[in-house]
Length: 295
Image (tube, rainbow, N blue to C red; front, top):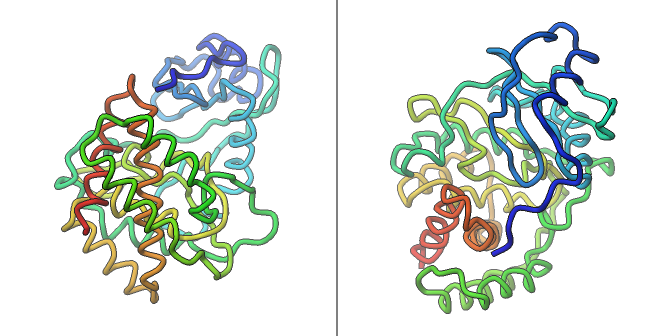
């Protein structure tokens, strides 16, 4: 299981504070404290009401630019709070890439509570159907989201063959063979979140409070986002999620089968690459159990 990639440049609270003071003086002097550091970005709490998001790798800088450009479009079509930038940061001394300031969004990550406590199946389904609108040619390409499942075959089989330390790996491989052969999406490319799992969903008292991290936003097969039915919920929640999605418009059975395949694809990545991040690994292990349990 690979370790977190090294940063292309060091990102520190002092650097973040300097960029904020120079470019967004309304927040100059506010305390800047590290809140989280992922593979792609370092997140800083800025005072009580804001967050600064700075990419730590060049590849992530392009994703920040996508968020800055397209998140306002997403927000225009949903009532769910999203981390729309209030300031689109520019390169500055010691930092060559775009970065963002967003409002602080209150809530507890859904990954921190059990699937049975995630009382957001209806509202998350409505969020998904709200944003799944036809996209134009300006939508950013993403080689690992929204694409035909078969293009992920080598990656998924490689993870399964390497061993995920989860039960029933051979059954998962057989299921992947079946699901990755389902006919591809032949409708218009729809706008997608691209990474809709419980660590990117905020709850308050079990209810949906916000959706985070649109770094993988793209357009393509809506099954990519419908995979959250297995990533986020148990069987009862999944049933509510599916019923709510279908109440907004028909969804064919092949799309749900591909969604299950996308859940297997994303869950295997979370299980394989999160040895030092137990919350993410737990999401993967849970979802792999759920995709098998639907047989």
